Every structure is written in structure tokens, then in C-alpha cells.
Image (cartoon, rainbow, N blue to C red):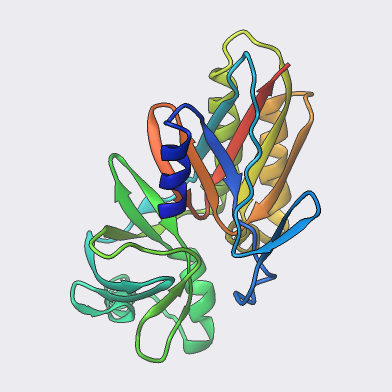
Length: 247
């Protein structure tokens, strides 16, 4: 998040930002990016696009809150240690008991993919995916959950998740007004692909349907990055992010 803030400060808030976070095939050890003939680790590569017509950028995730708000009382990097002054997993255990869910130790990872965290942000949530439970009751997440933030456990169903890609494309397309479309770039979270399995193809189809016959290109990323006019999203997980390019 600090990096995104710095990019916007260095560009004097004159640019929209659209992108995705690279990864290392779920090992979370070392990630590489490249720029021309340079290969970088722990790096960030930006491409400046100058256009007389603005690109249409928007996002949608299809998740809704299913718990009471909780305060992040301790977090370090990607590790969420405490919620409401207690080990984070204890709050999840209370959620499981309160909703009469049956979750075995072997199912913890799948459960977390289906009950992710949402950082309260205005009238919406910025999503964070807990990847695993640690032995001390902390949670290892795909992106940082800032200390002091207010979060809720989120849930979604396949229909809402599948439709989110098309909704993001439709919103982005409307921002172009009467401009014709050259094509679109889309980033969707790898966690969404893992959740949906073969149904992920249906989300791609919903995106193409919203775009029409224009070309569509995208990838699954380990975080979606956006700063657009009218909102300051920063970094999200489990969110469909679309950039529609005018002709």
C-alpha cells in the first residue's frame, strides 16, 4: 500500500493506476518481474500510457459481510495476529460455532478461501484472502491487513462471484461514454479461480459478453492494484478489475 501511495504522489495524482501483483506459484518465497532486459526481485514495474481519451477502469467483487465488525489489533506484514485483542483464528472459531458450520482441520484452507476478510472502506470492503492458519492462531494472508483497520468476515456464492467480472466490465465500459472500444485488460484473483474451479470459465464468458466482440485479455494475479477517479482503492484481493481501452 505504501508503494501505491508513493506512485500516486510521484505522479501528482494525475494518473489512474491499473495492474496486478506477480507471484511465485504459491510458494511465497521470491517473485521476479522484468523491464526490458532487467530482471528484478522485490520490484515494481510501471508502464506509462498517454492517451487523449481516458481509459475506463472499474472493479467488482460480489462479496458481502457475514460477521460483526472486528478491529485488527496486531498484524505484521502478511501475518494477521490478532482481532479484538485475541488470536485471529479464535474469532473465526466463534464464527464457525455461531453459524453451526462443520469445519475439520483438513478443511481449514478451503474454508478460509470461502470466508475471506473485508477491510471496511467507505460503503464497500477491500478484500484480503487468508491462506492458512498458523500454529499460534494467527493467519497468513495473501496481502497485508493493516493494524488498526476494521474488518469483517465475508462470504459469496458462485453466482455472485461469476457475475462480478461482467459487472466490472460494464462499469468500465460506461466510463467511455460513446467512445468505441479497442479492447480490454482484466485482472482477477487466483483465489477466485481456485474457488470456482471449472466454473471460472463462466466468469470469463460473462466478461466477454459485457464487452461484446472487442478483444479481451487478462490474467489471474495475487492482488489487484487500482487508483481511479472518484475512489482510492489501492490493493485488493478476490476482485475483478477491468480496464477498457478506447479505440
